[in-house]
Amino acid sequence: MELAQSALSGECLTAEEGLAVLEADDDEVLPILQAAFLVRKHFYGKRVKLNMIFNAKSGLCPEDCGYCSQSIVSTAPIKKYTLLDKETLLAGAHEAMNRKAGTYCIVASGKGPTDKELGQVIEAVKEIRATLPLKICACLGILKDGQAEMLAEAGVHRYNHNLNTSKANYPSITRTHTYDQRVDTVNKVKMHGLSPCSGVIIGMGETNEEIIKMAYALRELDADSIPINFLNAIPGTPLENSGRTPAMKALKVLALFRFICPSKEIRVAGGREVNLRSLQPLSLYAANSLFVGDYLTTEGQEVTSDHRIIEDLGFEIELCAL
Image 1 (tube, one colour):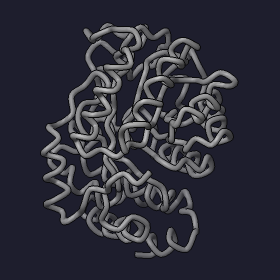
Image 2 (cartoon, rainbow, N blue to C red):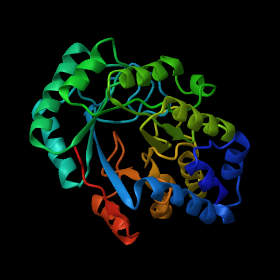
Image 3 (cartoon, rainbow, N blue to C red):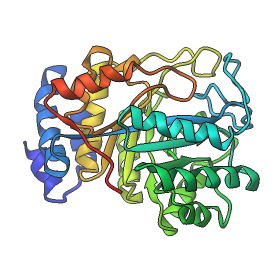
Image 4 (cartoon, rainbow, N blue to C red):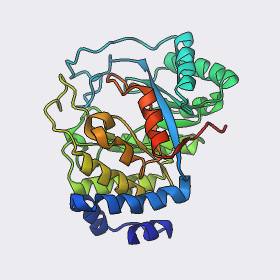
């Protein structure tokens, strides 16, 4: 319980302590999760935040991200379409409400939005904000000067731009943009009043030391929301032959991020169904948030299964409070 006490007192885990968590024997996972839960409970009680992703623009991306089925180097057979119209984005928002999600995440492939695409998103956001009690998160890539301000003025609450991996590992994942560009985008949205959402993808060849550096980087960035994805290796992508992260390792990773970023929204995100499998419920002892429904080009599990997990744990869905 020393890890919990240190996190609650504001002390940051040392690299050695972080390694001890990640390299702990699997027999120690339950005590580690209990310590993580004490921190999670202090800040969030037994509440669980639900988020829903909407793939507003699919494929057609010039970036070479090795994990992504939408990238220019992917041969995965996915749907490809330009930015969807306002009515379709509004329908997605209503579906988010049906799934009891408090945050609706509008995601578009590409390096960054054109002015026309940004205008389409803004038009939809204004109508959603006027009619539905939802928080809006946008994930549109690297923003140009002035675009963050426009999103904030339209009523977007949060902007997602994941670091994805460590700075050292970044060139092995993509070469069409840099780690520093991603950091700059997160800082830009913070500067203009948008809540920063930034996370990682575990399982892309990183070392345990690099996982710890990812957590430190997000602590330093002061990201409000941290999605922890676990690679779902999609056939047709450069990382298609990557193995899954063992469920017990995934739980240790979630606990590590809770200890290093104790007060932040830790979201168990993409790939949880594939990597955590039957241990998904245990993830919520460290994480306090999850995605419901499908992801960008991969399927999630049936939403009632997630609702049932929350109910069976004795937790409760946190309703949106605007």
